Each structure stands twice: as C-alpha cells, then as structure tokens.
Image (cartoon, rainbow over all chains, first blue to last red; front, side, top):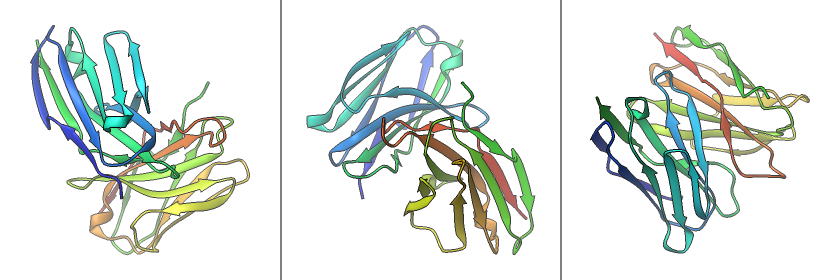
Length: 109
Length: 113
C-alpha cells in the first residue's frame, strides 16, 4: 500500500515563531488532506490539497504532486496551534485514507 | 450544516462482549468510513460503505463488521471484544460523486476491560 511519512515527529516552538511540516508519499494520489487532532481526539480539516497551494489565515499548504510531497506552514504560531497534525492520502483509484504518523507540535508561551 | 455525529462518546465493555458504534454522516454524503486509532498503532482504515454496500475493508479480522442504512447512517459492530480493541473509533463521511474530501466525527472511545 501507499506509504506516508511525516517529519519532524515532534516540534517545539515559541509563540510567534513560524514552522514547516512535511509529508512525503510513495505513489500518485487523488486526495491529500491535512488535519489537526484536537485534545478530545476529533480530526479537524485544515486543507484538502491533492495539488497546488492554499491559504487559510495563518496556515497555508502546498502539494507538489509530481514530486510526491506536501508542506504545511504555520506562521506566527499560537499556543492554540499545539496538538498533532496528520497528513493523509488516498492513492489513485481508491478512496480510503492512509495516514502518516503525525507531527506533534508544542507551542510555548 | 450539521457535521458528522457519532454515538456513544464513550463505551466500556468487558472482554468477549459485543460493541455497537453508530455514525450519522453529513447530510447529502453517501459514503461512510470507519477508522481505528489505537495507542501506538496510528490511524488505520477499517471499513468503507457507500450507497448501502461495503466497498472496502482494511486489514482487520471478520469480527469487525458493520452496515449502512438507507438514510446513509452506519453502524460498526465489534464481536468477541479483545483488550487490544481498546481505541478511538473515528467515522468520516464524503460525497463520493463530488469530492474525495472526508469529514470526521468526534469519535467513540472504546475501552475493553
């Protein structure tokens, strides 16, 4: 099956800092999503981005499908940005999501 | 617009019992997916239902089963519970004909003692 690798596994930031999370995947995809898992476990949709670039407030994402990677940018981080960020993909011809192991982000005041 | 809902929020069962988890998709969505998040194992795909049919299942034993009802809501049943079934079970929905994007519910935390 498709492999999804996220880096770094852990990230500690000072409030106000910028950061970049990376997701590498091993095959062509028809779906790539970034999620933030809240403390209660729910996955919050950040971006649906199988290709291209999107921005939503302080967050933005870029997927380069031909090179099989995606980047999530967090700017001017806040303590509320803390949590686990997951990248998930569906390979072409499939609908189920395969998840990376996640990046745990800790933002310190 | 109401999001994906799941019930119950928490469920405590004894080894060997059966558990039933429920999910209601976003209105208009025809596909329902189930995922398991067990400690140390990450998020794993369990089952996919669309238009009342099981379309795909992950690498889980047959005691994990489910169904999708005519109103597109879904039920996940886990028979002969084992301690390692303790996990957060997440349901997601999508409109297969319009977009691949999946939206997740708040989850059911199953504890097997």
